[in-house]
Structures are given as structure tokens and as C-alpha cells.
Image 1 (tube, rainbow, N blue to C red):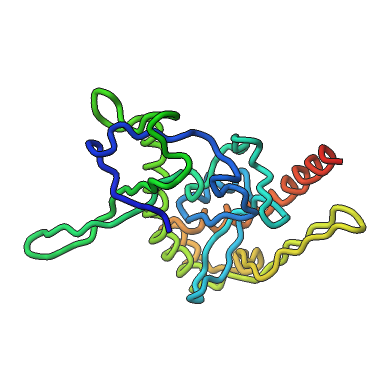
Image 2 (image 1 turned 90 degrees about the vertical axis):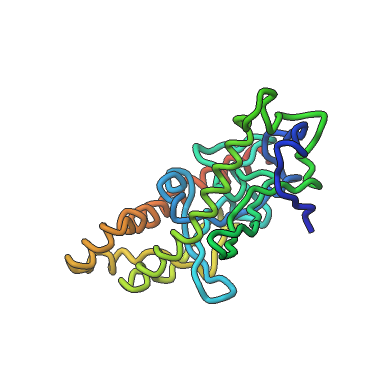
Length: 243
């Protein structure tokens, strides 16, 4: 259980966070959840696919590696990609909620929380969270942006998947990778956009998806599967380096 508390610029004025990424911070994973508002950036680096969640809904993922616990984009404490998915770029921070009364009605509003037990949190080493003259440091702003992406992305993804399902665009797919005669990978139980269904959409549906901003996301997801070739190249380079 994380020791999560609401971040406070007075109580936590001297907190610092160690920069960088690493297996010790939970970055040694072969896939990461992403959201609709990340597709434009994520599709440049990662294959994107969908999985069913425990409630039967859909969740988008970016592929990071082929073996369990393998992140091919992780090199020491560096993440070698143009875009780091928000779930990993949030660092030791998370979204909390606090109750606020407005016009006699109690509402829950999001707030930034920090896991004080996270190994990246320190009072001695790392980058300051708050500036000496007041205000958030660039490091904290980066993590806050990642949290905002997650918070808004959850709702954006719900709308996107509802539109994709209504338009009949979701189809099961297989990602099969053969590195040599003895090494094959198959990523099971995943879904993507059906190219055939997309090509057959009528004008009214295309116009509606475009107005909602979902048509471009469908093309991003479909095109991103071309990044499987990049994953294979990265995997082969790593295997050669370890040989």
C-alpha cells in the first residue's frame, strides 16, 4: 500500500524527487495502459492495442517489450522514446480526491497526491518539487501534466470506445513475432481497429466520428501497429548485445 498524502507546498516544501526511470520504480513492464488523449504522441513510438478489463470494457495499451518484465525503451535510467506514457511519467505521484462544498452540495475534486514511501522521494537528493520563491518546479509540473492526462484521458477513452463499438470498428487481432526458429511470441486476447470496417463506413458515420475527434484516433491506433517492426528491431539489437 502506498503511503499517499495530498501534496502540500508548506508541509512538503523541502521534498525532492529523483529524476529518471528504472526497474526499481516499476518501469520494467512489457506493456502500459494509455489513454485516448495520448494516441497522437504514443503512435509515433509504440504499437497500440486494446484489452478487455475486468468489467468487460476496453483499455488501450502500448507495447514496450516481448518478454515479461521487458521494457525495450528502458536503458539504465533513461526512457529512449519521443514520448513517455503518462502512467509511467507521473513518477511517485497519483490522483487523490478531496471533498468540497459548493452551494450546499458536496463535490469531489481531484488533487495531487504523493507516495512518501516511494524510493524516488527524498529530502536530500534529487530535484526540488517547489521553487524557493514559491510555485511548482518544472519537475513537479511535468508530473502534474501526466496526472492531468490520466484524469482527462479516462473519460475521453470511454467516449472513444463507445463510438468505436457503435461504428463496429473493434476487431480481435493477433500480434505474432518470430525472431528465429526457436523464438516466437504471440500476444493473445487483444483488439484493434478493423481496417475493413473502417473502409466500409458510410459518410454519415465518418462525419460523426470526425466531428467527435475519434476518426483520427482510429487511424492512429491502426497505423501504430507498424511499430511492431521497431519492437522486433529493438529486441534483436538487445539479443545481439547480450550474446
